Image (tube, rainbow, N blue to C red; front, side, top):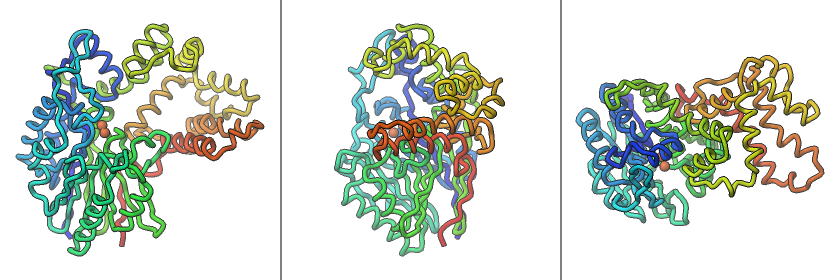
Length: 473
Ligand SMILES: [Fe+2]
Ligand SMILES: [Fe+2]
């Protein structure tokens, strides 16, 4: 079988500049978003230009094309897709942010967030609007309950693509209804009967991957049952977006069938990724590329800009918590949170922020060890990190969520030891306390997930940037 090479990109969240890119209201909106909104067009242009020049056979876009479903954002991003389609066949699925399921599409003027006069698209309109990017070439199409399109197309001799809209499973969650699932299974069976490899893409996650704690809310409903069913039906590879984190994960069914989920980061946020996926009948290869240079408003910007923007989400909270009550309250308001409703009193938040900002890891570990009678953090490992500021480690781990751990720390490293000691503290303390509630399964699962998340963030089981995966026999 010939090789197939795909470029896959997700969560462009293209934001039309006509919705406002200056003023206090926009600045608050932007500062609370991991993605670069005003710059999303420039980042999209740069990624598309690079993909157009590549040797890929087709391009897949896995949903959240627009910031929040605004008609104007769709119109403008489609101009970019049309241009890319002059070089490569393009296939699109759209998702909740393409029809603004949250109904909070807005424009920003000075201090004002204005919701009126920002029309959005509906799922049936999206099907028409992006008709040539999937449905037009479909060998089979399923119109979902919300009027969105799932389709199956032939990509090349020996390969098919299953583009799925998974916004509703009919039971109040993302996913697919029973009828939709049956259609999906038929496409997989038909491809198998024809001797074709079928590759799928939808927007939400079918497995939590590195962390249920972080990704639990991003999953389709009945995810285990669905992963089991699709793996046993013969699906090997599924591209998803939504979490804005770059991660490759595997689900193995009870029968031993492996389903790989390639979760794509957002192309408009750190690390501005787009992924090349090459497959033949023996193996598949994943290579993540990054937009490292783009042109915005007459300036050349690079990875450092995107990194600083994404980092701003957590940095601003730490800085503002230290600065004062009002500064923190304003920042939290941007996230839709009220400081008064947070159960932890502000002086404690401020004190924590000060420690995080100013302590070295060695100093922070000494404080934890004082409170835990020396049992908290490995002293030797912490001493090795006397020159590392705690805040820098916090920032690095935060970025690792998004970039799939570009800076891994091996299990024998001091950072790994210190962080996993800290992550296991809740479990270890709970084991010593005579409190029944802490022994309950739910709490134990939470503790286990904290530890698993820390380990995967430090040192992922799969290399999330480059991986070669042997196919099923
Ligand atoms: Fe998204
Ligand atoms: Fe999403």
